[in-house]
Length: 117
Image (cartoon, rainbow, N blue to C red; front, side, top):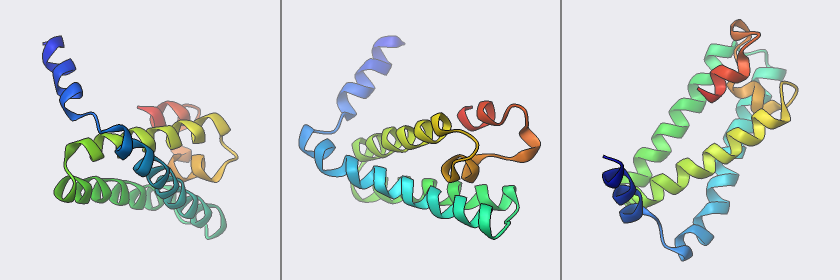
């Protein structure tokens, strides 16, 4: 089983050129839509559940489009870069708009746990 998992990732690792070209684009993309959602939640007082839905819709639609056009290696890279942005938001904490874009007040005091899980 472990060999199959390792084989899967080895077969689908993007080339170095792909990583160098697309990583900054994916980081900027994920950061941007989380920033906009966090801004809307904090300034326009959008309900947390309504703020989280656009995040999921944009993230999954992006993965879908990448899969259809470029294939799985780019989806894996996009997922990794989005995970970096989410990790950055969690490290920055509750006062950061990126964190607020994903957090729900009703999850307190375990907001970070529910963002990560």
